[in-house]
Image (cartoon, rainbow, N blue to C red; front, side):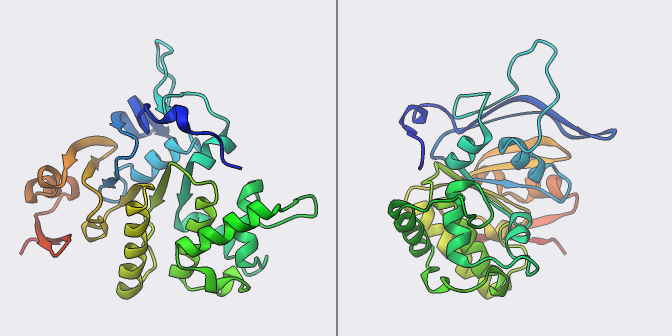
Length: 275
């Protein structure tokens, strides 16, 4: 089941000090420093290739930064620089199109409930050595209900729409009652109506106390509940702060390398290329 997280309450969700990530000859992240408070809904915004997804992989311990000369930790998550990856992933759930591809492969069918409850075993589906307790079963059903996906139980993951599959994967992350959800371009592949419904389900999670860390290059996907923004450009921090200070014509023009205009539309913001 989920670990006791009370001792993480006072620690920041993320504390990065001059992190650099090298891919071949290219610096994907270049001495990036960033601190995010626990409970702080945050959007990481930037053009393709700005380092957004690399940052998420760094947080999730899927990749590691270059070692510092003085040996001091480059990145801490909830105040710790060393983690058992399984424990960390019970505290921070990850949802992305790449993860979805692993679960919707029609060559290896997987039923929705099994996809969710198998998260307790860090597995894709249930195996003969997995013993699902009643508490696990109830928690999986609660997580599915939390994202309005109960009606999908019994269906194969490969038969779901993109939006339905994303909700199931969020339920899979929620069984551990994580401290945060890392959402890497979660609206990729969704049509406008499905995207709005999906964003509304994320709003409900934010209002229920789940910290959201949203990675996107679409301003219109930034939820009203997200007030803290991080703007990246070419692997470096360009700007951070609240919406008023980051969602400006000048800042987005710098980030995307093209004249941009930002406007508010109801509870959301939109951005477009200036004429």
